[in-house]
Structure formats: C-alpha cells, structure tokens
Length: 286
Ligand code: R5P
Image 1: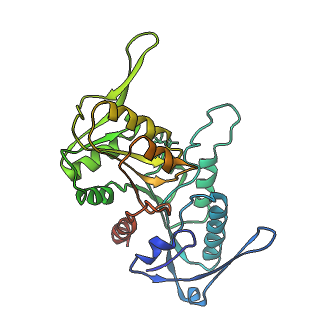
Image 2 (image 1 turned 135 degrees about the vertical axis):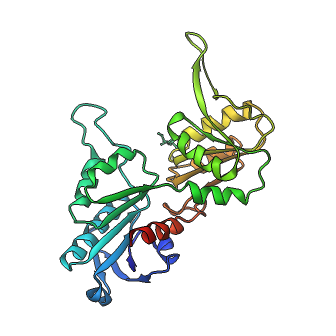
Image 3 (image 1 turned 120 degrees about the vertical axis):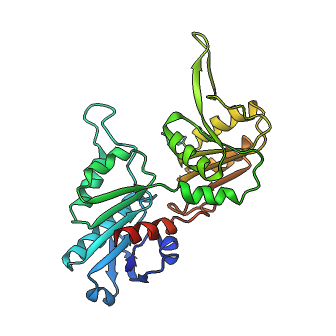
C-alpha cells in the first residue's frame, strides 16, 4: 500500500506503507499549491491520511485537491480522516442553518472513494452521507492499552455525560474495571446535583474519557464534581484534543493530574497513536 497526506505526517510516519511525498506551498495571497512526487504515476491504489483539525478549512481544501488529483489519475483512494471537522454541526439547530457536516461528507463522497474511515466521530449517524464503504473506528482499544501502563489505584472510568458512556464502557472492558457516567439530578426547583450515576469514587483513581476536549469546560466541571466526591487522582483524556485557548491551564487549576489523548490532532499530550487502528482496518479491507 502507498500512503500520503499533509496534515497527519506523525501518523503516516508510523505506518508500514510506502510514502508518497507532496510538495506543499502557500502563496502570499493565501492560496495553496500541492504536487505529488512522480512515483504517483505508477500507483493504482492509495491511502490518504488527512486529519481535519485547525486550520480545518485549509486541511479540507488540501484534501479536496489531493482527492481530485487522485481521481484524475485513476487511483483508487482509501481515505482515513482521523478527526472529522464540522461533525458537531450535524443538524440545523436553528432554522436555515447550514448543516456543514453533511456538506463536507457529500463533497468527500463525490470523489468516488474506495473506502472511508474516521475515528470516534462526534455523531455516528453522519456516515450515512458517505455512500461508499465507511466506518467509524473507535480509539478505545489504544486508549485502554495506554491506561494499562498507568499505575491506577482501584480505577473507575467515567464519562462526563451519558452521550460518551460507550467510550467509558469500552475502555473499562480493557482495564477490567468499573465505569459510570455523571448524571444530572433535580433535587428541587432550584437545585440540580450532578454525580456519578451509581459508583462511589471516594479514594479511587478516576479516568474521565470523552470524544473530545475543546474548551475544557466539560472536563473542568466533571473534575470539580469528582474531587468533591473524594476521588484520589483524576486523569482526563479524549480521542481528539482540540485544546482551544487556555484549556491546559484550566484543567490543571481544577487539579487534573494527567491529560492524555490520541494523535488524531497533534498536541503535546497526544501521545497515543491511532496508526495501529489504520493498519488493522486496512488488513480487513485489502
Ligand atoms: C459533547 O457532546 C462532547 O462529547 C464533548 O463533551 C464536548 O464537545 C467537549 O467540549 P468542551 O471541552 O468545550 O467542554
């Protein structure tokens, strides 16, 4: 297999496939230029790994250009998008809003992909916009293996809300430990209490897992609740570390002991690679 891409070089380096280099430039007016190395002319099938983190619009345009060129050259493309941008705008929350996720996926689908993969997509239903073979791959296996090496005392995996409880469950299965999610309960007209649904975390190490950490607001709130419960250590991790603004500072301020995530988005805490997931999927596909 041959592999190429611009935004996910750290993942590509870890893959055991032959690399197709790209010459990439940005012109003074902001337009971009991409040229594949000549080796591409002999290729009939390729894997493109291109994550769509910030600046997501540039990474999208890079992807469209690469896909169109491959199509022109008659190359079959397996596309792996580690982080799918715009997935949170999965519907019109207000009338006349653009459903950007749908537009992005329909454009990607128009390049006659051979297969399409993404990792822990915010809304799984989005993949219906891709007509070709597609899959949402979960990073819980690599996250679980990473956590196995941590020295955790009587660990519990906690999802900050019911929506990400699947991630917590899968990670907990690997660690063979308990999992739970934070539940909001109305105590009275004015008082809402948020607590782990059924598990007592007092004196235990808790790992909060989510699909993404963006502004950190969700993690900060979850950590504050767990510290009140008497939790020992709190680790906070997600598949996608968007880490917007001063999020690291905010997380440390509330006493989060460790931040971790995968390399779907490059960051100093993105130490877990999703490269093994790509290899596993391609072995099944080919
Ligand atoms: C929510 O539905 C998501 O799963 C995350 O919890 C959320 O997007 C995280 O965002 P932030 O870090 O800004 O709270």
